[in-house]
Image (cartoon, rainbow, N blue to C red):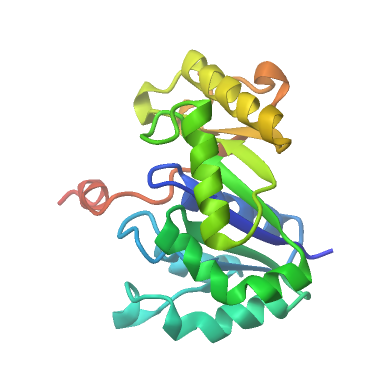
Length: 228
């Protein structure tokens, strides 16, 4: 079956990085994959920044193109609607985790419900507004109210980049487990960047580790890598 995944998370949660990783893993399974970038707020770390790479990998990216690459959602709404209704493809929606971002889902909610979906909230407990159980539950309430959809699963992406260690990730897993238990949500996976995977083993607290690449660099990081 070709699923519809909605990936949502607050600024700095890593939800776009997770969306890209998910798209690639599904493609490796032999799926026909489309990733739609619905993040209309965040100027950095948008999944649309991997357009050229995805084209080479055979993954469809739905996002404004060329001079309109930082444009808002309406110009690509018909393509997103078509992807949601196309059950011949596995579709991922990368959505900004604030009311403005969530409301973009509102225009597609009937089609989303008709198809069925899995909605994953990516959580980094090292970021503001998602540091503890109460903050995360308050965010979930806000996101569900704004989107008119229900979160079904948590993904723990607790990290502090180069300061990430086992203890930090374990603490994040514990907080996410509290939320999942209270709200009856699925929670199976925590993530770690490949650069730090030797610090954070698989199987922490009975969960599965997902190792991700570092794809979405800040503009000034890209310049440093090019020697500028």
